[in-house]
Length: 222
Image 1 (cartoon, one colour):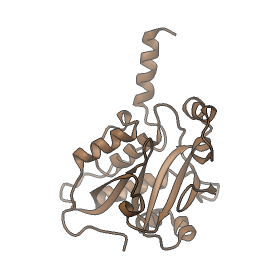
Image 2 (image 1 turned 120 degrees about the horizontal axis):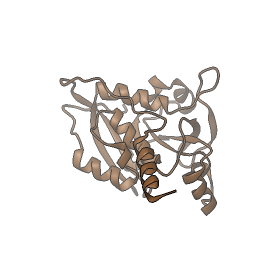
Image 3 (image 1 turned 90 degrees about the vertical axis):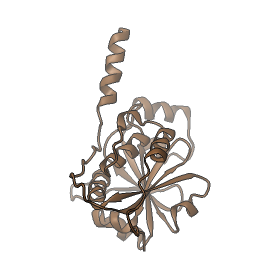
Image 4 (image 1 turned 135 degrees about the horizontal axis):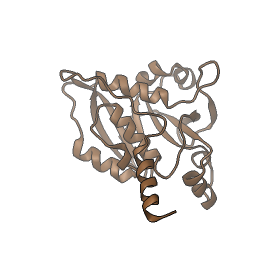
C-alpha cells in the first residue's frame, strides 16, 4: 500500500465516528444550564459522571442493579482489554487492531465525584435540559441489548460497586474510550470534534478551556 493510500485510509477512519453515534441536541438558545456533569481522567482513560437518577430514567435496569446511588461513572472500551485483570501486550495490540467488541463500565459512586476520585483529575461542567436529553440518549444507545431489549450484564466491574455491560461499537486505534467521552460531550451540546480527541489529556484540556458554569443553583444527585 502506497504512502498516499495509507494517509487516505487514516483520514477516512478518523472521519468515521463508529458506534455509538453522537446524538445531536436540538437547538434551543434559551435553554438554561442547570445540570452538572463531570469528566474524570484516570491517566490514559476518561469516564463521564452523571447524577444516577438521570441515567436510571434512560436505562431502568441500572436502578434495579445499583439501587439509590448518587452518581454513575460510565466508561466505554475494548471488551477484552477493559475487563482484563492483567494488561498484556497481546491484549493491547488486540484492542487496537482486532477488537472483538466493546463494553461499558458503570460504577455507582457513593460520594461526590471529586471526593471519590481524589487521586484523579475531575472536571465539572453544566449542561442544559436539551443537552441532558441528548446525552441520556447517547448513553442509552451505548448499551448493547438482547432480543428482549434489555441491557446485557457481563462481569463485575473494577472498583466501587460496578458492573461491565455489553456495549455498542468496536474499539480500535481511532475509536478509543476517550473518543467515546468526546462523543458524549458533543451529544451534551459541546462544540467538540470527537475525531481529534483520542487521549485523556485532549479531553481534559478541552474542558478546562470550555467549562460552562451553572446559570443558577445546579441540579445535583440529591
